[in-house]
Image (cartoon, rainbow, N blue to C red):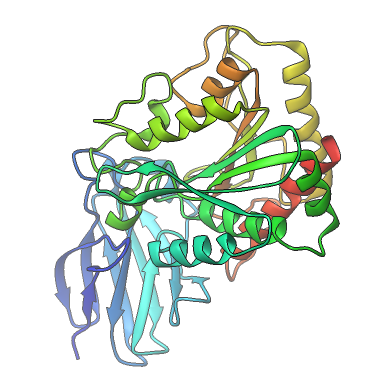
Length: 369
């Protein structure tokens, strides 16, 4: 029997170059109007017992070639439970081998977070007591930029995710955060809702998410390089969110992401902004240290180099918000690979761990405030 491969669905991305029995040679489609590519998501129709041999080629030209070393592809039979596959990388080719245990196998760069699940999340949370729903604007393809608000305090907290749509662990984190914040029995959530007003945007790039992009929107624009000058023509997603932030002000902000190469959870801050204040950076460092003490899934060893004084890139949201509002803002990165310090050979980094990390981040915010 010959396998068949399809990616014509929400967030699907693969090009089938050749199929021979249970082996396939594949490649990844670039983001529209962009050279970025790394995200893949497809399904294999096969026979139980098939020895699948799937080779994704051309990856030496992908967005982050270093991300493939030590990486294992994600897979699921039911699209609920995701596990890692036997995966090797050599000379630009990622080879995935697996003996089929069911007739349909879904394979992805990370466990996907579909736009349908996004709408289910928005609908369920919008029904919770004390929650206000706002549509901040629309994407270039007309999809809503959804925002959920809650809390009665004066501290303005913005949580937003998936500027880079292929970083689906970011919306799993958001699901965990929203579940906790709307749990009437959670004491940290209750305290946070008294101290803060939360503004939560679970998906800033719905067009890229649906299209199976790694990093850009419909126009091929990297939204996290638009925050100093967003426009309705290139980046309406950023423009509408930043306008809403101008209305509310921003005291704390977490921009949630995934990192292709670094096998750890870490934070990036705003050290290089021109108007850096000692109290501002002290609060960020206090949060960082407290989070490391709160969960062993977070660490302080691996991460990005800090910007030199006055040299921050203000087109990025974290630095723009710190400069614009004096906010304590941060970029939270989770791994596509696994957590080096707490590896899980079955799942690697996973949706479940992303959600638990959200709980730890919010508990830490409550502690710091």
